[in-house]
Image (cartoon, rainbow, N blue to C red; front, side, top):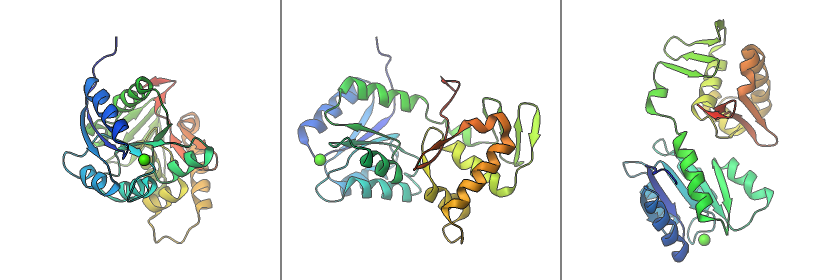
Length: 238
Ligand code: CA
């Protein structure tokens, strides 16, 4: 039997039948819902408090392309951390890469199994970061971070990181389980104005991994896309 879930899910989808099926199934599974049939309406509902925990986003919308909606969500301070699952009618690799590049967390290809999608939504929301994780200390596996003191330990050993490495680690950790493109990392860690190239990101990730030793494995390389902090330690949700 499925356990009941909780959370607010926004569905942005212009196919009326699919929209109401998604709405019905989400509610049946214990979620609160909001629905929108255009990108503009979706963006408005996304930034209305309380901000949704997760957004199901169709790529082909009548007004704004779903990719643009996703970019706008990531640019808005209110919605930048919200989980986004893209619903796409096309299943090729290009869509997946584009999806990650605009900041989506996951994607499903239509037609999809409603049961499978509900399970995926539950899994994602279960591992969503509690607000406490943004407070002073954060522990992930053998990694321990003191946010205020800017100190990092791997097991018992304290690791000396530069301010930039610390920021890089933090951005990845706070968005764990979600792919961060080099461009996003450049913007968020170095600042948009910084006069550095995406190759700089690779260099710093490499150094950070070396310094973290075995905990460096928590940072995964997503070939051709970017980097991701693992969502779980040893396959077990944290
Ligand atoms: Ca559509």
